[in-house]
Length: 428
Image (cartoon, rainbow, N blue to C red):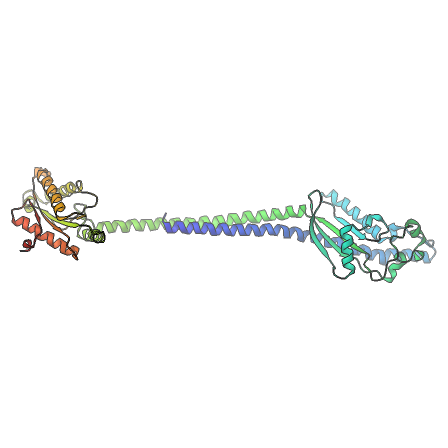
C-alpha cells in the first residue's frame, strides 16, 4: 500500500479510537447519571407518598377521631399511635412497602423521620442527621444529597429534606404535656417529643435509595451503546479502508503503467538498453554528481565496423539478432555504475562515472577485444571502433559526447577496430 494511504488509515484509526474512547467514557458517565436520576425518581415518589400519608392523617384520620371524641363516641384522652401518629403510620406503611418490594426482588428503601426530640427512640437522629437538622433550622440548608457507601460496600443515594415547621396546631401533641391526650402522656411518659416551638423544624425526612440495581441497568444500557458505537465505527472504518485500498490498487496500477510507459520512453526496443533519451537523462544525473564530488567522468562512443555489409549479406533479421547479441555481450560485462545506450542504428554510447581518460581507454580496449573474439549469429565476426573523451572543467554532457564522437571518427579514419582518445587534433 502507498505510504500516503497507509498514513491516512493510521490517522483514521487513531481518530476513530479516540472517538470510541471518548464516547465510552461518556457512556460510563451516563451510567452514574442514570442511576442517580432513577434513584432520585424513587426518592421523589417516596416523598410524595410521605406527603400523601401526612395529608391523610391531618385531613381525614385525625379530624374523624376528634369528631368521634366530641360526639362522645370515643372517650376523652384517647390516643393510639396507630391512628393518630403520622410518624408511626408512615413508618408502618414504609415497612409494608419494603415487604412488597422484597416479593419483587427489589432492595428495601430506607425511610426515616429523624428528630432530636423524638417520642420513639427509633426515630432518634444520628450524628449526621442531627447536624443537618441544625443547618435546616438556621435556614442555610433546605435539601441535602450525596452518594454514600455503607460498611458492606453498598452504594446509596442519600437525601435529607426538612419537614414543615411546627405550627400552632402541632402543639396539641408536641407542646406542653398537660395539653396532650392523656393516653399519649401515659404511653410516652418521658419529656421527649414535647415542648416544641412554633416555626422550628423538629424533624427531617431521611431517605436512602440503593443504587446497585440502577447502576447495573445503566451499565447494561451503556454496554449496548458502547457495542453499537464500536460496531458502527468499525463498519465505517472498514468501509473507508476498503475504498482506500481499492483506490490504492488503482493508483498502483496507474503507477505501474506510468512506469512502464516511462521505461519504454527511455528504452531501445530492439536491444532493451537505454535509448538516447534515457542516456541523456541518467548520464546527466551521474555527471552532476561527479562534478559535486569532484570526480573524473568519461564518455565512450562506439559502433560496429562495416555493419551495413551484415544487413546486405544476411538480411535485416540477422542484423537485428547481431545487434541484440552485441548489446547483451556488453551488458554482461558492464560494471554497475556504467550507463550504456544505443543512440543510432549500430552506434552506441557509454558513460563511465569516476573514470579518467586512461581508465576509459582501458575499458574500451577490453570491450574491443571481447567483441572481436565473439561469435555473433551466423558465425559472423565483427570489429568495433571506439572514441573516448574525458570531462573538462565547465563542460556539459553534450560537449563531452561531441568530443567522444570526434574521437570515434578518428578511429574510423585510422582504419577501424581501435580505440582513440579525444585530442584537439581529433576535431579536424
